[in-house]
Structures are given as C-alpha cells and as structure tokens.
Image (cartoon, rainbow, N blue to C red; front, side, top):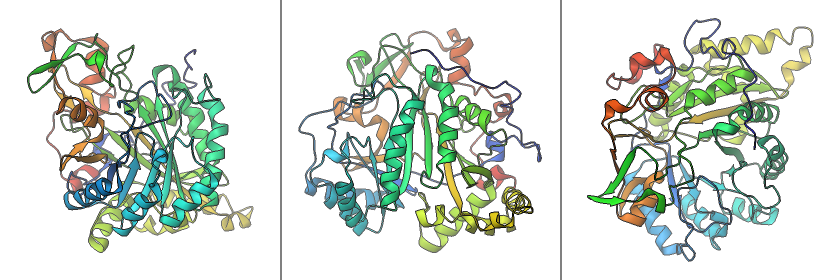
Length: 460
C-alpha cells in the first residue's frame, strides 16, 4: 500500500487561532481534564479475549476459551465500581459480540447506573442482536474500523473505501438511536487519509457523534530497549506487542495537523497529559457544531470546564458520551456562549449565514467530537510516558491496571520495565524528537513543567 501524502502545506496546518492568536494545540490553551485513576469519566470492562479479526497492531493474544462467565464479570463490575467513580463503562474484548450472554452484561452495567458502551469491530453485529442489546440498556456503540484489520471482504481496502462500511454501521446505530463512534488506528502510510475520514465524519455528523484517531504503537526485538518484568528479561518479539516494524513515531500533533488540513480553524478544547511529560497531549479532544453536514464552529475550553464541573457537582461524577438527543440538538450548546467566546463565534456564524435564508435557523444542529490519541511512549532514559488520568483502566486481580498493559500482566504477571540498550545521550534526531519532545515548538516550554492546576491551564 502506497503512503497517502498530506494535501496541505505547513502554513495551512499552523496551529494558531486566526482570531484570538492562541495556539490551539498546546497545553497552555486547553482545559486539562481533571480525571484520575479513582475519579474518571470512563472505565474498561473486558468480557473475552477471543476475536474474529487479526489486527496488525493488536496488543492482545486472542485466547480461545477466554470468555468470562457472568459471575466473573459481575465480580469485576463490582470491583470497578468500588475502585473507580465513572460515568461510562466501555464493554470490550477481544470481540465482545462473541460473548453469548452479552445482553446480560449490558444489563448489569446499566443496573449500576452507568452508561454501557460497546466497543466492537461490528463483524457479528445484526439488527436483531443490536435490538436485544438496546433493550438490555445499551447507551452507545463504538466501531473499530481501519485498513489493517484483515477484515473479510475488505482486505487491502483504503480508509476511503472503508467509509462505505462505516456508513452502513452508522445507519444501523442510528436506527436504534444510539451514540455512535468510530476508532481508527493510524499508520505512517495512512496518515494522509485522516483528512478524508475527518471530512466523511463531518458530512455524517447527524449520525456519527465521535471520531477517534489513534497513533499506532508496536514493538519489535530491534527496539533500542530491553524489556523486564520483576527482574526477568522478556523477549518482546515473542509477545502480542510485537510486529515486524517498530512503530512509535506518530504523535497527536501529526494527527491534528491532518484534521486542520481540512478544517483550518479547528479548535481542540481539552486534553489528558502524560505521566512523565505533562505538556504532551496524550488525548486531545474537540467538540464542534455542524449544520447540513458542515462545521460551523467549536466549543472552547471554558465550555468543557463548566460541563465537567457542573456534572461533578450535580451528579457526583465526570461525564463522557453525551446523549444522542443532545448531540442531534446541538443548539443547546449555545447556552455556553455566556462563558465561551468560541461558542459565541459559532452562534454568530449560525445566525449571520442565515440572513439571506432565514429558514437555515430552523435546520437541525449536530454536535460531534474528534479525539486524537498518542498512546504510551518510551523515553530515552528507559521511562514510559503513559496517559495521565487514563480512561481505559480495567480490573486485574482486584486492582486497576491500564488496558494497554493488561496483556503483560496476564502473560508475565506485571507491567514491562524498559531499559535502554545504550546510554540516553546516544539518542538523537527523530527518535529524540518524537519520544521526549513534541514536534511543536510552542509546546516545548511545558515539557518539564510540574502539572498545573486546572484554572492555570485554561487561561479563562
């Protein structure tokens, strides 16, 4: 597969806001989500490790016979609820649709007062099965679709070609009035296709509420680190984390650049930083309002801060996955215009563009979310930079562990420790740039800073 080249210039991807002059992809100007391990908007529930696809980047071994019993799942849900105050529970795998009693799992999560959201490849999904899941209390569904899954009937297809499948899945979710999202893992040779996916999502904002782009991370025996667990050296090439190539170079900045190629004024509003480098944007989140399949404008950091604080005070937890009813009636976000200058600009654009055609004011407005994710990075010192406030924490032997590390716990009894094969000062050039420093010069000053308080970060 030939790499898809970016379609815009460096000038077009300039990250400064054209009106405010703020740098829209820098920690200083974004709201840092106040999520922690114990108090988070999301949690991760793995119901099986069996899967019907073989993704090139997957960090799991697809173990036959690994489907958990309802009693085991019930115990894990109880542990999750005791250890993590959350709003949404992501029901995942493996492939969760392979679980024969998935409807009961959804009902158990719903009975705890949480939003059950299914993370699936959609291969086994039928209208009847989805109806049963909705009757059990399913709130939303996120489809994992990309070109490296070896999906039957879609082998060798580009991300653009896969939009046909994405649309069919989105229509299925829309019929059942579910929150609908898509995850896509991005490789260096598919980076340019992010533009096409972002444009496709915008056009289908009436039924696609979330689009998440994940920078690929894989390991190999040629990595410049040695891997250990409890003092035992591990051959990474024999684990599920290994692939033929070391894929660690893409960053959240690379992904956001592609989005801004298509939407030059795009504004992210919130983020999760790194456990080692607080200024690295591990999760960068943006919410925008669309009309007639076109983006009108964005919600700014002040809106997200107000929403999270209000939710915490009123319902006792931080929130994620906005109700489809609100997503399909995004005019309610204009209430944030009282505190958010970015919403005021969006409202003005909505009103001013309807001067010659007043009926446009009656058109339905949709709210959509874009997320770019930069998973765990290795540092030249051998340290690891994880997502601070990781949303994907799950249960292992009665404790919370990161979902990306679960395989190492199951296979080796604990997380990997990495030690450089050479001294840290041997690392230079691209490796140093992509692992220790963000490629964005405006963000460099925040790399070694202590984590800031929420109000200091927003500047609002």
